Image (cartoon, rainbow, N blue to C red):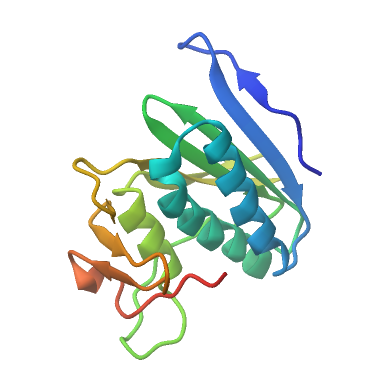
Length: 173
């Protein structure tokens, strides 16, 4: 399943790209996180691993839940940013919705928007769509990623603007 490291040629001489195909089943969300963690460690992008894992977890979970088709996860690194893309066979593009504070759903795209500083979106393609997000290291580091403080041991997040998450979010192992 794990493809060899590939390179995309474009404006910059070489952009590292890694891809994996995933079945549309919840158990493969953890595999997607491991793939991202291992890929970014190989590329020595350690400061981007946690935020990128969270973004991938949300995007792959959405693909499993809503598209119900095989997924392709693509990870690339260019200009000090990691771009993740999740492609599926559904033409329906995601829309960020706002739910009440006690709702048990609806925080995923808000989390993606916060972690990517608003650099996310989707595009249709023949036979489906691709949802993408770009994650950059926060200036100053210190465990803060795009305005979010992540507690690695517990997985709890807190945001500089708590209303952006609208409730607690937990990263499951």
